[in-house]
Amino acid sequence: MERIRRELAQVLVGRRITGIELLEERLPQNTGPEELEAVVGRRVRRVRRRGKYLLLDLEGRGLLVLHLRMSGRLLFREPGRDGAVRPSHVRLRLGVEGGGELVLVDPRRFGLLYWLPAGGARRVPGLAAMGPEPLGRRFTREELGRILSGRAAAVKAVLMDQRRLAGVGNIYADEALFRAGIRPDRPAGSLSAQEVGRLHQALRAVLREGIRRGGVTVRSYAGIHGEMGRFQEVLQVYGRKGEPCLRCGAPLRGARVSGRSSVYCPACQR
Image 1 (cartoon, rainbow, N blue to C red):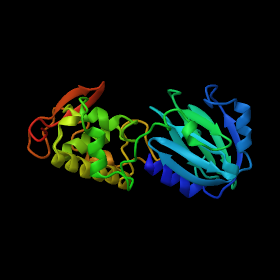
Image 2: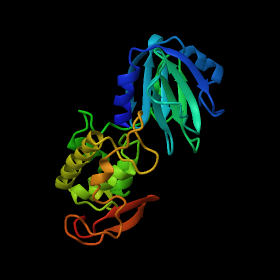
Image 3: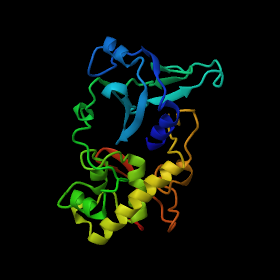
Image 4: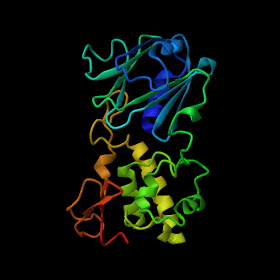
């Protein structure tokens, strides 16, 4: 999601919204669709991310909040550059000055949209109780230790709990745990101080590499200009159940951890 935020900032910041078209009756979640007309005429001041939520700060304290959920994609189309092909399953169109258009494509209709004319992101359900950002300066190995300490739940489940840690998904959790040598189903509170330190380092390294490679394209994920991510090219465990471990050669195993599919190496991860 950080890749999407950066790309949106490049094309939206400083530009004025010229129109909005809603094509999904479920949007927005917190107000009537007619109230969204208030965004027209306002400039985008900043694009932020909190966990998997995207936040567009507009002039006059207004705030648009988006969550793409399972199948949502954002596409940005510049006039004269993207041809006449129109994507299907469009739920929202946002026009900006200069003729550009931001499009929300969401086949499964799970995406979320909130309009807060007076700002205040904490009024969005899910944002108020969200944990720290794993790439933030305040997320130290000591903070991770406090998050895991005393918890009987599987360490992977705690990593993916947005109330404990913001924005860590299934793929990145599997990859970080492999790099740290920790089984995904280990009780979180059983990790030693050394293991917590390895996991902290691995989690930040995996997330940074994912951003550098443009994310993982396994289903619908892509950048706002349609380019696929490349992090899937270097995944070491995710999606490789039954294949040999790239480190030791042992067959990778699959498991269900808190309802999510997981892949790990029984020899390298303890």
